[in-house]
Image 1 (cartoon, rainbow, N blue to C red):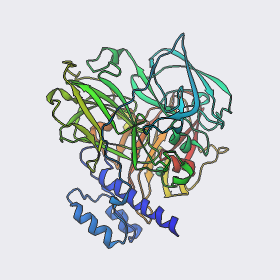
Image 2: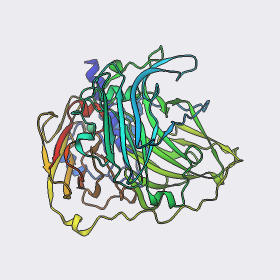
Image 3: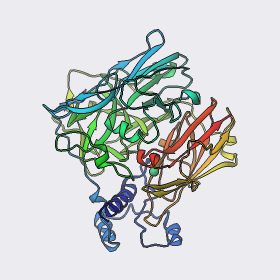
Image 4: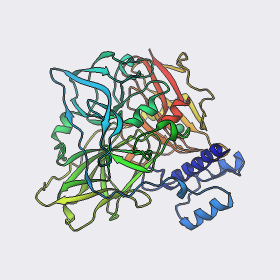
Length: 511
Ligand SMILES: [Cu+2]
């Protein structure tokens, strides 16, 4: 009973995260509400209800009427004290075409004077930033030094199915495997993490995650901050819950609707602060959490510019006052610190104004970069827009009962086939349930897709770019133009890692 109640509470809370912060755009057109007492008909009538005009008071009252906990019960994150300078992952580039990547376990001093048992790539916790250039042929020399099987999945990379690192490509303890491929996509901020069936969530939770940067001629020539660790920083957001002994106990805190924690780590750093110059700074944001959505804004209310989505640059910088990233999603933003002084207390905060990352301004450093106005030539063509829907997916359920088209993942079942190089329209519907439903970040392996429409409408400006993960709110239908450049078997799944493990995943074979 108690655990059921907990699930219910978390679910309702999740619904409200959706309602409060679910939009990737500045205008949230489709708020999500608690529909627990409603019929399906009621729900469909309400799907597009807008409660942007509601006060927090209204929301609370609504919650109480329905007898559920409000979103404020979702475990809050800590305010960063800013006592630790943000860790910067080592930057790794291919040497003679080879990048060594070893999954290993170790201990890490996250809390002062305490060693926490952690997993990492080429180190005890998290991984390096692997930087490559379009056109380069690279071998990832992977090695598993864990005491359990793992895989190496390249999230967002356009790569043959057999090299993708899905659940079929298990590497046993002590095993090594060379993954050779040619970088065939443009500049983008991608990432890598494990994907073994039934253990993805726990391995990511313990620290297996790293960035992949792809650069190209365009990104090298654009006017953008691009000095790694100087004015161009990776930021991976992950919330965790520690035991009293400051250890991870994933099984103790695991939640079937997504494991969340009260403690934020950015690049593995507790209570981080980032020292930057009095200049324009590029932040490459990755939601690397198992389940929590992150809404990020500046505490001053000032706008920033978004310049890239999951899979590359937007056509032009877009002014944003906040951005929400679901698990697996990335965005690159430019924050102009030149207008602040060191006395200003600038910070990235979340929707509850919790300080996630305070900034410290070092007056010595400055640049005068004028951000390029033309960044990319992304387009959804009329032809793509007019293609019929040829794949329909319905996401439904909660907890252990999560389904795609009424089925749970079966490694021995191919759900769809698609021809290499052919664009198809995938229509994905997130069907509400009696609890209202929740956001499912939908991810497809091995490709970058285009968002053609959301509920029949053009996506917001900051989703008009290459994506590999799209946050789908309860009741929403999205149409994606999907093309695979390589053959093989690829996963598609919800990137709430516990949903994925509970079966919200399927397979497409590209022939
Ligand atoms: Cu999900």
